[in-house]
Length: 168
Image (tube, rainbow, N blue to C red):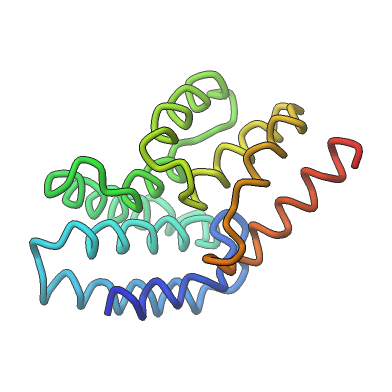
């Protein structure tokens, strides 16, 4: 179920998806995974990431509920395993960037050394840097995605934007 749930998210652009179907499918699969294996940090972390994926595409009135469920799943994952990477990534997505740039950058940088190749962490770091015009730095993070292991359309688009904005 975890593998199927994460596969549902592979085609999803976590920060800007307009296609909510894959996130909803992932949430259903991963909720079932947490029911079957309530002590699985991986299942809870994957569920938190699925909620994070759904968050950006949710209607504004739905966002508090989506965020609350995602944060609760992340909290449970981190109780079971303080280094659960998907839970850490989900929390980075929920953290509001606008007018919180310095704090968010510190938080993003604090998580990256533990999981330096996790696409969601690279994505949010690159996105935050781009949002303040630090395009060359943003590019240094978006170039780190392992495109052989992860097929994520939003990550490829992010790389193209970072290349273009940094003058390449």
